[in-house]
Image (cartoon, rainbow over all chains, first blue to last red; front, side, top):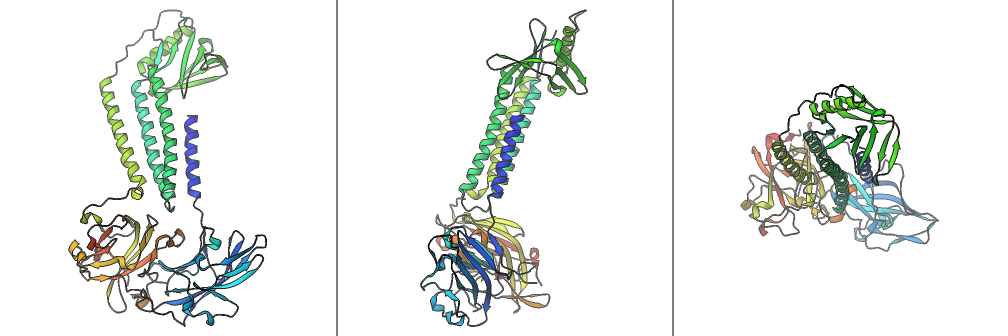
Length: 180
Length: 385
């Protein structure tokens, strides 16, 4: 009987550890600055905006030409305790507009000049932006999105392989189809 | 005189069968729990390892039970024997290893209590594997009458009582026990074992689920699963798992009737993709209509669709577009319910197709997904208006 109890409790312990092993890395942006940390590299999201104009050029998936630019304002900073510097790369960021995956904007989208002067829009084909340890850098992440969608930023800061997910907006809906 | 007390073989056997059933149950339930816990893990190796470790643990449990049963049977189910000098009893304990305890009559006390008989002793001698005696302090065992033949137990207790009191007076009368029927037991055991094996196989196959068993499709028709579209139901193609939350009938602001499917999708391999191009509606699906691209409508151009809800035109949110997602872009953090909008005919029923591969090629290639034909009854759709 004692052996049975020991084995059973081992099994139960094993199960619980396997359940809790699924760690959550999802965040909700509420309008307050949100800082994501990954081995000394910090990404602080300070806000986002949907631009009414200019509108993105026609894309084959967007037959009704509804796409808009979504700009996420953020700051990337490095703690002074880590060695060297970090190249902020466009490959670290991806956005989901509802179920649709969107890459970060490329240079040819020509919207850099519309943005605030002290921000640096990361684009696909420009040079990477470098941050030294103990310093920070303001960046803008641009994507094309459809209106009326839930936007989730997928950030793999410093290619740690541990993606962090930030849901930027939330839509109240009782049926999952239309907003309240 | 009854000098030995044996377990009733039938009771031991049914207890053994019960224990095995419980373990079979634990195995299936445990597998289900592990599968649910590991549902969001992307690699198929993780649940496999977890289930492997779990099954190993239950197998140890089974082996322990089987070992105890084996040693019990090799002793002919004997629990207690009166020693040859008639001065005490030998008690055998069957755990992982068999152990014998000697209790002299002077130290033995018997208490009858309803369905139980308690044997208590002040002291006893416990003999370990190397036959070395150890003095054991106050202890005892409880015999449940269910485990013994009633006549045999009464005979044994009468004998012990007689010897305990110094064998004075006439020997107690021994009642004659009935012989159990052996043949029936064996057949019953074989039946039970067979059923256990079947339940274990089928139950674990179902519990472990099709996630690790890739369905094989040979002919053209097998590559199309035919199902009925229902709310809160999970459907699986070779590469994807579709969880349909709601299926709605609605009308656009332009007066077109549409089908809106609210669902979430979980990839079953990393090498998958999904876009609105994969969804079509047919008045009535058949191999031929699909091969001829004779569809009623396609789900590709519905981004920005507005539907009438409560007299107001509202845009449909989170619609899948023709780019959708590809491969490892679609990680667990972005997996949320979304919508597919497609025009529907006004008929009483129609077919909604998930096209996993191009039917023109007749059979899906090894890396292609399989297709699902969802039969839709218009009256079963939830109405949004």
